[in-house]
Length: 107
Image (cartoon, rainbow, N blue to C red; front, top):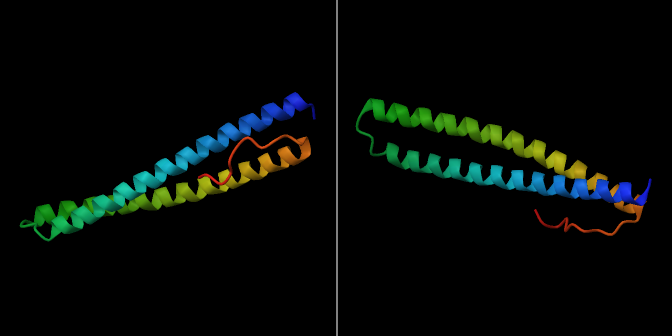
């Protein structure tokens, strides 16, 4: 492969890695917020006087738990994608003898 072609592929992979890492961070933050909301709702349930209020809080908790399950799946998919991209980057860097410009320990 030509050096310019290899460099552009490396730069593209590095950018994609940064984007996937950012997505992973966002999903993790959303998941933490959902867990916090669940804890709040569970505390609020103790003070619920009406059946309707209690029922709506339980429904909200169920929705949040479903969201967390979806976020867990998304996190797993993004982690696999990140690993694949990092492996591709390493192969290109070894084969192209290009210097590393991304810190793979961050994330």
